[in-house]
Image 1 (cartoon, rainbow, N blue to C red):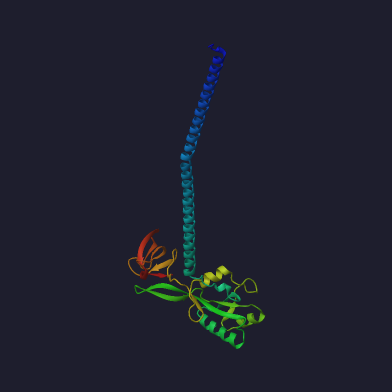
Image 2 (cartoon, rainbow, N blue to C red):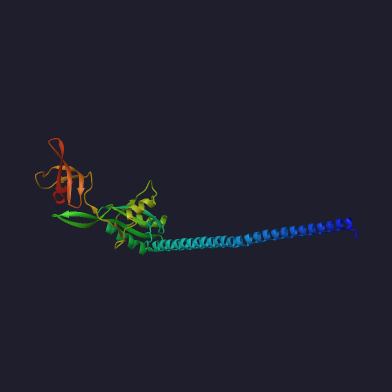
Length: 286
């Protein structure tokens, strides 16, 4: 039997080709598995990383909500503080006493009339009678004798006495015209109006408030009293020593000690001014 080498060679080549094909298939399969494994690892990494991303986002949202809540609480606290402060201011304004009425704002104007010293009360009574009898209440509104409380010392005792601020003068609040002028000017005891020239001059706001003392309480009988007593003595005033080793000496008041009821008087002794401390009762006005 004759062996066909060409047929054997052909079979061998076919086997070799088949083996190569199988090897190539195996290589492709292995590469495919490796690729799938790599994709799995990537997906697994992505899936593993995904929860961390969610956590960070949740933390940021929680922090933002907390910051918003803190800001809201701060706004509420600020609003409450402002409300409390406003209420306190309102209470303080409500508790604050209303400013006293100024006599200058009353109807009419204030004029000064002159009378005989010591007859102020009599002149006031006469003028008020004429106002009523001549039906001038709508033009002449008020007659005032300015008064003040003065601290005096008699027999070593302190006492408060009421004195006229301007002896010989009265204040009249009125609408000035010929008729009202006539009624006032021809009242018994009135010697005239105070003013420049022939026409009376009304007082300014400052003059009215200083004379009538805005903070003073109205006294009885149309007298306006100052709220705080004034000392009988004043700095720079000349006085005479009534008793003691310097009796009959004259001097000038240099210091007033109201608490101890003492004065420091500069007395001229041998041509030199010497400070001497005296009680209020030891001196008298010149």
